[in-house]
Length: 150
Image (cartoon, rainbow, N blue to C red; front, side):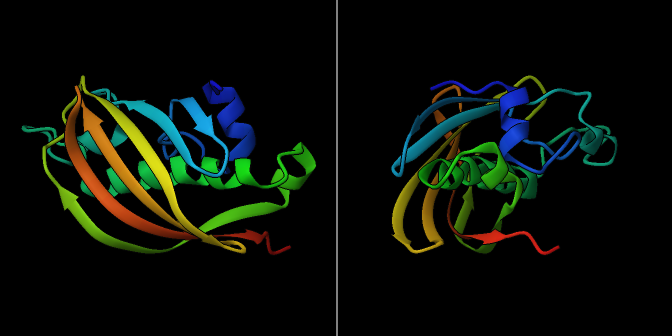
């Protein structure tokens, strides 16, 4: 299953410049999601990180993996548009995060997020980000799907 950015925006509440998933390339419901983000020099974050040596911040890599994980969590539940509008995914923890390779403009950041454990609304996810098949970042994420507060 492929989702373009317009379909992703129907699932995630994030918007540019904080929408960090350009395309979902595969979803195996309840098991894993694969997605990517094209890193461009026009990203607003590069104005300050760092102007003379642009490096995509690790926190943005983690957030991109988390957003991909949110797509996985929504696909395991009720994906009717009305249901998605009333839910949000909150991230509860980030563990064992490791950054293996700097990400630069022109890179394509490939995310793979696997469900390790699920208990009710709580998910434990194993997430990786790769560039050209090389591991750039890995982390264990914990998230919960909740009703939006009105």
